[in-house]
Length: 271
Length: 294
Image 1 (cartoon, rainbow over the protein chains, first blue to last red):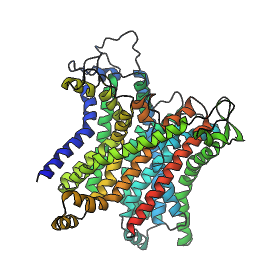
Image 2: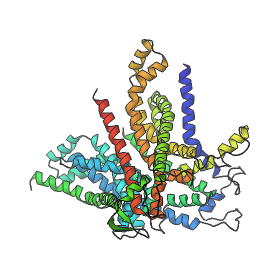
Image 3: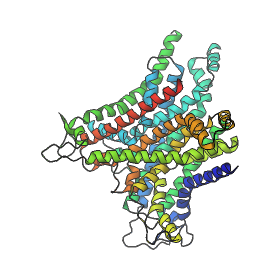
Image 4: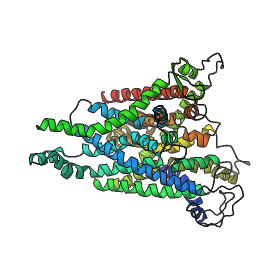
């Protein structure tokens, strides 16, 4: 049928639209042309050398400002923030998911709605609300405020992921464990935790990726010296386009694709 | 200790710390923002804890008569944000619909892989994806080079810093948001109904308009709302691809906090965005409920 073929062609165009811009960045990160980054001028790894702080063959103009040390500091900050927020939000999100799914209490419905709000709300609103709050209570903006601020919405993502896992879990196994005389803590450690572990892991992975990528909320609550990677790149973009952004972007792409791919692969194996 | 009290204690153990955290760092900030939106802006940033009647009025163009005259510029920016967000939603829907249809008809293994490919960009850094579009839309960018190469234009066209660039950027960033709910409802389509429609002599267009479209309406509505909300309050896309020329409400809010230092007015603007989001969600919930009860 002709329509099916048309649809297939369209589908290919759809994926081209999604992936061509990303591929473009990757390809041009190897472009040797330092003046006009749009014109291909041979293959080079110099942009990668540059961002790793190695010797390069790039002739620098007098106005060129090397921002590599700031880049490295930003990457470090991003990792510190992402690991801390992932740890906190995974514990809190999992605890809330367990409470809402396994206990009957009056506020359960309230928690379900409350935890949905940060995911639906526009980022900018949460960002400025946190900024107002931190300044009003006299908390100096720092890495700590970034961590606290990001956790407020990352908890929701962990909550949703773990809740989905809990919903598919058989309650009777837990009941059997209790009937056989296991203490609630033993039941939790030996039965509940292993069976929700993939959900917890998935939630943690999601929290990590979102934390590494968060721009809007971090932008409002970061101290002047504490730049994360997305904010650093944004700053570079505002000062003008430089070819090494291609290389940074490519490395970030590879990292996210590996992490997200791993997460989605693990999820597909569970089923 | 009885089982009941033990369970109560363990529930409290699970709830206390996260609840305290969310109360302190999520609910309090939101309430504080609401309060700020009614306070007097301080002369050099910050606030004075006195009621001020004009924060919301200024959005509509009301002037404080001392320094300002009637000027609906803020309202115009808000309306422009609504228009650009709506355009983004429309573009996302039109682009996603056939693709979702195509993927839903694939054999299961390929279908899962295709869905994986659609979801993957969602995890790719937002700023990286926008950077890619800067490269494409710049005066010396790929689009212009392509157009000049084919001879469609002799000199570079202005794509960057236009409404077009902002809508393209937002479409690109938010397409997974539209796609997934849309796909969920297209996948559930009853093929028997479509075949019946053809058997009864309906044309393709009729079948689409009378059978397929109504059946996927909940997915369209859900995808539209979930895309519209982040698009409306966005300020990264307009500041990267729109520059100073395309200002949306998100940029306006950012300015109130970082350069204009009028926090109460910025809070009032944020409340306006929240109100718009809330209205939208209520409408969508109503529609979804009506669909459930035939």
